[in-house]
Length: 168
Length: 168
Image (cartoon, rainbow over all chains, first blue to last red):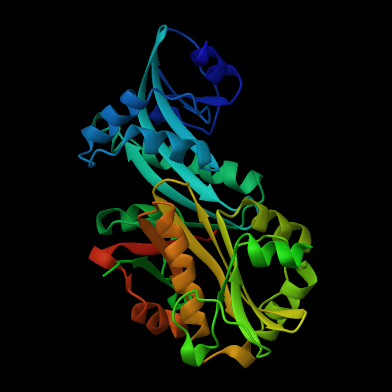
């Protein structure tokens, strides 16, 4: 039920990467990739995805809360027949008015370097823009700064610095 | 009503800057400074405060929404007798679990350079920590990077870059 709900209510299908052209559905027996903003996510499946990229485990209770209170949650799925596999995730916090900050962007290693991370980010940016959020931000680890720059993100624009509080 | 509500339910009083020692109330006829997390803010008074530091005006409808959907809103007030004046403001977005991002930190020019901005930020950090938020972030304009560094914020820790999306 959750699957079909996500498929028809708050998801968008895309063709496989080579023919990706936005959010156009494709039919046929081929595996397909689709995005969703549905928050009914199996937390263990999400943990598995995060394990696959080597992230430290976090308490599922807190992950559940973070998903609940994020402004936007985006998932990326591979569908084969009736089964689907979680292959990407990202979320954004926001004040619902001016600012959004994107966190926890992850694409399963088997699906990296195929333009899918970029497609997922584009999907997310489009959703945020459609909500009239003008200031879209993130904190990028050094090895992904280039990736985000290619997507139109600027590091330290006009000298603005991202800062993190480290308690003594 | 809103005033007393804020004074007794979700506010903390502080002594004037010279004797500031946390969130200890002071009595007597002296003007005093206090902090609050009450969201019943006169939007015109807030606009006046932001005007005083030269910020661009923003639609009050959106400011209202941003306040509503911020995780934490902090105001700083000067109280003289029965009247109070808004002299500082800051707010944070959050996923209520891991991350918070602080936005719109403003102290009225007449009250700057007295340690009040620092006191307001400390108040805010304490509130965020009490909610078990471990990752507290912000984006600092170049001229306030030093201010935040003195408060324990690090710029670009481990090469992490703050990035902003600039649509083509």
